Length: 307
Image (tube, rainbow, N blue to C red):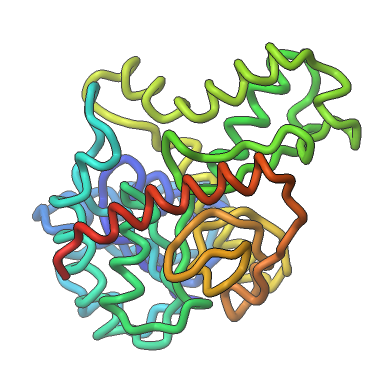
């Protein structure tokens, strides 16, 4: 198993480190346009492997030649989000970056599975699919796992319970119109609507929607990378180990949930082939309307693209 991480910034480097620590590949390649950065970070990670007892080769490069025949390519490249900047503000710049990275990566690894982490997530995943020409089961975005993790963390904090006992469910685009579903979110199987008042649930839902910008506002000059990297690696593990896990990911819908020709976060079954099934659940009218609005927001952004 060979995995390439495009982008040696905080998200990319931390993702590479987690891949190595979890021994999810024989070789991990980090690619970046900045000379010396991927090489230095790759060497630093590799030097940790004797301590971590991880026999994974780690390579840093400015060339895509080293990425040839990768099984999975994780795209994290792009400019970071800054305070006051919406995800849509990132779109024009990052779409060009993701287009270039995707073209270079798939030329060397035509059979790879693509996982996109770059923001705005749903639109960038669309860019990667269109540019690569890959079937939809081989291109996905990391968003729902992260959004659900944030929702789970906030629920656990509110109830003072273990995060292990909390499951949360989030649909929709990765942004202000995401749709955290409280009635499908549980603590040890108990719906959170039985444990928390509507006012508290609404507050946690809002904090989940604002989860990314909350961290950006704290950091001032950067954005989240610990939780995003963990979320991407959970997806990789499901694929590498063919675990058939049901995880919320940005997937290209062609009729599911009544939606067409757009990427939006939905529960999928992840296995060795990538997205092996899009899981459809019953939504009430309000939930479906919220999902439709989220999907419309993504489609409006996609319509502005020039590929």
